[in-house]
Length: 385
Ligand SMILES: [Ca+2]
Image (cartoon, rainbow, N blue to C red; front, side):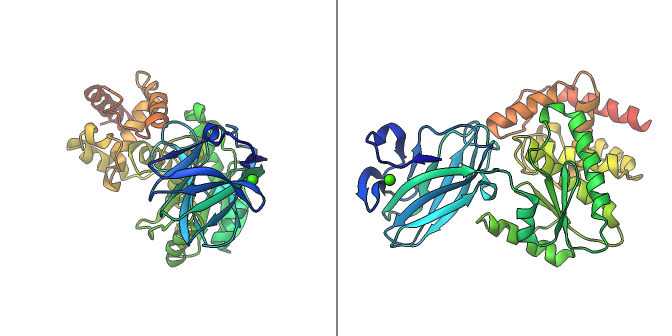
């Protein structure tokens, strides 16, 4: 489906420049096209596109640049700044056709985007070189990354569960058993938080054969999104909704980090929650990790933490939480899932995060003194303190 071919007049009704630069319709080799003379970091955005892209798999356009350059192709989708995007390198000179599988677009920072609420297509220009664009189109398919597509980058074969997809080349990994366990995790999450809804595509967990291939694999996944990913520092990492970790024969398929990262990937697939290591993502990942992999020493460690806790105004301010405080985020999640006076708070946090990109309980105006009192009471009853 062609979205814009620039054959009809009325360009200003359909496209608008931002942050400087000029744009005009121009006669090109095959009819009319869009000629942009950008200022550095300026952009041009469309006004009207179909909002539901869940039936589309690719965004294509033709482009010509006067010199080698990079453009950011953005698909604003959802609230505020929520968008999918990808950097595209254009060679200077002749016309070229750019084909972007939607599954390999990145999620912009801030509120997470959704393919069912697309608002526009836009191009942001890095340099002041001239660019011509034509035939901006979408084609039928799915915008959700398939496990098979992930496997083309990571290696390994795909074992499908009902919700989970395990991608691995490790012969001694019982991938069916792991997929079943992750399905049970997904069922627990969806039962506790029913407004999430089921994922539109299987949620991938990649189990690399060893630590070096895991670290290298995360960088390669980043490169597939045209992004420079840092080699991960922890034993599991979720990037663009793809959970990753490595094989450890001593722990087998029931390794706790697999559950932890799978919850992050599941939340990315089923909500507009950002994945920035804040209290809600880490608290939920910890909650289900401990539920499926109980740790006998956890209660004692938590009790020591709660004697001198990180204040909730800092723990739940929406910023990144260090791993040493994950147990404290676990108490907030437990209270919000199990204490009747707090069960209405979780939907409010998800709703605010979709609007603002932040899970801050401070911004939400939650009574943190009451929450602190109640989580201590909840933990004391749970552990018989
Ligand atoms: Ca045209």
